[in-house]
Image (cartoon, rainbow, N blue to C red; front, side, top):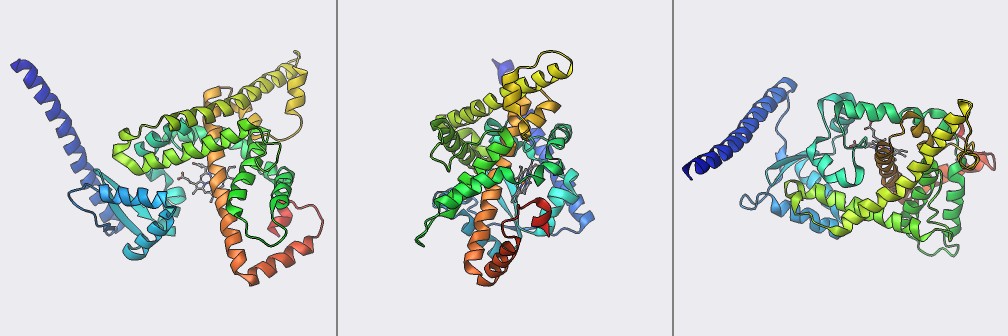
Amino acid sequence: MTLVLYSVLAFFGTVIGYHLFRRIFTHLENQQTAKEHGCKPAIRLPENPFLLGADVVLENLEAARNKTFLQLLRGRHEKYGNTFTSYTFGRITINTCDPQVIKDVLALKFDDFDMGKLRRKSAGPLLGKGIFTVDNQLWEHSRALIRPAFAKQQLVDLSTFQNHVDHLIELLPKDGSIVDLQSLFFRMVLDSNTEFLLGESVNLLSSESSTMSQDFHQALDYAQQGTILRLRMGNIMFAHKDQKFTKACQMVSDFTEQYVRKAVDLHKSQRGEKAGGSADPSLMEAGGEKYVFLNELAKETQNQVILRDQIVNILLAARDTTAGLLSFTFFILARRPDVWSKLREEVLSVDDEELNYEKSKA
Ligand code: HEM
């Protein structure tokens, strides 16, 4: 009995000692780095010391529920500066909107930072081991894998987007009544991205959209919301138990896997043809000449889990960012007649000529 007690005490002592040692070591290391770079401590977001940051997390969740999270964040930055820290359940979060810091983290000093456990754990169920959840060699591998598929000449072909923009324009009311552009942009972006990435559009803006496509859209939304919630919960993420979230992640995975299997089969078929074997004509026809991002990826690897994870990561990377940018742009255009007139003039000068990458840059 005494031996068991001693063993348990020794175990907990080692665990606590290890964490304490790591904290002290990290603290000293951070102090040294801060001294070297002349960093000043960031302002700390006030929180109730007895609640371990639960008040901050609850405030975040409440704002997210009311769709006012950006206002909350903006208010905090206005009050506490471009960079401030928050302490929640033993975790320090650095919030920043400082352009120089963001540039350093994402580009100039990229190697000094990593995605971290929190992102891996919160996004793992949806994103698996894709470019947004891995570090070091695995990240380099992801980069090397997807780089060839992003070759510039593929971005020059704007015809993929034409159809979907036309669908969006058709849905705009012609009587001057109010329309929620943001929700249309979200659907348009997913329509064009699925065509560009998977070779087949989910066609959410068209009446031809299948139930499966709509379910996929909803599942992607729910899984993404759940991922953000897990991220906000931080160290108490273990309390996130949501069957609907698990099912949504599974649905996104299943939906993507069908296309992954097709792309791998197409690649094998094309390789068979090159090697003088017989190619499957139905697959070759399906592959066609059209540029499909996933088919390009399948030339680099035929590992279906890797392909699925990378494609879900890119689907997510490309959706809210583009839809958000379009929504912001039109929000501003609606309020800036001077910018609107200049843009209109430019568009009219191109007339009915086909738009391409070079022309859009001029
Ligand atoms: C206006 C549109 C976009 C914005 C504002 C944007 C912004 C960003 C940002 C901030 C990151 C870094 C994220 C992080 O790791 O924390 C990122 C990464 C990434 N984005 Fe975008 N993005 C946009 C559109 C796209 C599109 C259309 C695609 C793909 C078709 C894409 C693919 C990626 C990929 C693959 C990464 C990971 C890069 C890496 O880790 O090396 N993005 N983007």
